[in-house]
Image (cartoon, rainbow, N blue to C red; front, top):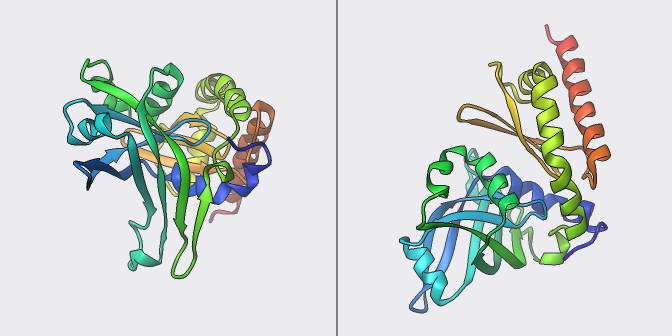
Length: 244
């Protein structure tokens, strides 16, 4: 895995990944490519998490060959999608029994909770080997997983701190979350809650709406995360004062 030194170096790739909640999953069906649509979340290392049914064709494929690929794109709002950013991840996709990963996934996809307890559903995690990034025409690169996947020590530190930070913000600073949503993301409705925090940013949700709030710089522990959240609140307040 990567070390603390890739916090900043891998940030552009992680920004694209963490912003998205769905992907095209490529598996092998009798040696031929098979592609399906899946919902995704990410653990604190930025490894993709999926909730798959054992009845699905892609899950059957994985039982025979666990090599898989995910295409994650940031192009849906673009008039010329091929000029937009996308990342293809290659690796192995295997079932996991990890309560922390399950919490991360269900925080991003709360409606999936109805399926998570079914015997024919299981959580999976992709262990990337490498990533292929396209940041526009001619801007194409291959990256080793160590270039962007975070070190286990950083991930564990943030995983331990996440619940306390999220609970504190939702219990004591709901007005600040609404202010951030209104002033930094142009979402005027009240009732936003924080659902997660990681090295690169935080997630807010209101009903079926989701806001991804990137930090100004990556964080490696709770103190750094709190400083970034305070900076977001201060920026929102400054913009609110400048509003007509």
